[in-house]
Image: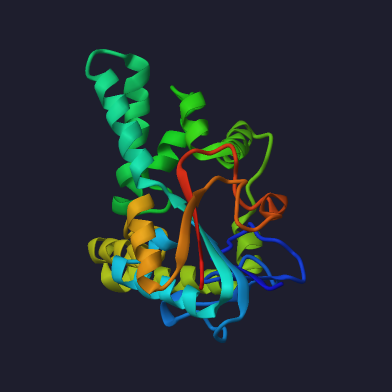
Length: 274
């Protein structure tokens, strides 16, 4: 059985059955691929093509090309599994918090603030982490139960690491250590320092904004169960089904622990190539 994890980041399975690929590989176990140039595997290769929180980073037209590529590399009878932010649930949670906040519910007001960030921040931010990062790194979260119900255990662990660093219990890697770990990024820093001198402060800020917004972090489009089903069937997939973090057409999916059962912000959807 051949399984493919596209845009795996730091979360992937080290297993002979799996191939892991990312535009910016986290380790030597991950192949480097620029998905805007297609998926560099032959036709009909994989029993499962999986990607988590990848599709929303493409413009709508490029996302359709990406899904068509996923169809091409799936074996007949193979499946695609997608995890991504669920626009439908974001909209419902936003409206629910709005209705309650508008009549004076202070707890709902904090939830409303968070849902606005889920809806907009990853599309409009001009620096890494954006307003969501600022919210999550407050000394005291006004609504931790709600936020961690939305983003899951991974978000809770990330905040704990931040608090440890802020308190001095844990230390950040030095700039030298980071540069040695990733020399290419070190050269980027040197190049940016040169451009700062050449362009001047204001033009350099414009350059930095453009560089960030084309760097892959921001969300370019959003989807729900209807638009995802329509997209998947348009390229030829059938048997489209909304799943959970632990349910799948693949009988052993939960054992891979790639999807977080604690979070409620994502939609998990699968389909089969006839």
